[in-house]
Length: 412
Image (cartoon, rainbow, N blue to C red; front, side, top):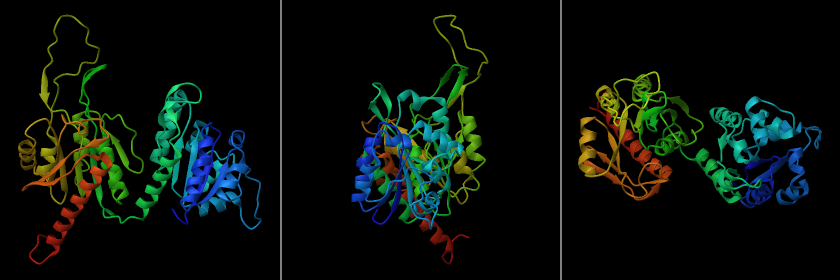
């Protein structure tokens, strides 16, 4: 972060005391930190504290112009390599979402074209309120990058989600952001289509069949592909994780909806990764009213869903196709059978009965297969690290394919 200009926006939440440590750590890391405080924030931590830690004048009032040669809020907005809002209160998130610029910080946020990173911090009920959640979703769609709050004891006495992430973690998050911006973009210009989550097959308005998929692995792949320069479309079924920012998101609840969403976008894709856990069967009939309890048993007839991956394999032309297989036994046998039957270029298989490899975990243990058998066996890694390794192998194989196609005698 040496030489980077970071505008640190401090809002009026009790977590503002953590922002002093964040300011110090960013300065120690070599960043030029320009602190902008809301008036409410100054009631909790004095501007003099941030001035001593950043070695720069702290801005509060939009009309307090220190240099007559520039307009301060425009100058800071233009010079910023990133704007970091920590803590980001519910009030500031609402301003950001609706374009309100009534103080120095909100005006900079409206004027800047730099990446905006926000670390929310507030009461658990304020965080969960539909208005706040709607603002978060809107801002994610616009590209704001969120550093998720933690779960724990809050200053108000509640226990829940709403604690601002620790300064050390925020610094690492910002460092990783800059590293990703400066890293090579091997997927630049490529269209990547990724599915994630578990499908929902409805029996009636209140009951459905589904599975344990959380969407974590698919989301990790979408984020990794985005950071590698790809134009990413994420088709999300039922998920339990925040939707990644910076990607196009299409929601598809059932297997039939997901099939329509994937097949309609398949022709233009360069790389397709089918990480969603799609139900093999669905109820033959979805009734419009809640089924009432009438006896000791209930018989439900299930019919087979279309095999999306198999259909993609049949239609495959220039696309590089990666499938997933969640197994509980005979991993290699089942993975190779699926890869060959469905004409995948690679198939990522894991034994979901193993600790650290199942649905909803933060880590995974996978083996990546090609038509010759296991191509890469990975140890226990975070799902983001696993995603990076999958994409790295895919990039190598795609590059080799293009080189073969372009060589004399290669396919046109």
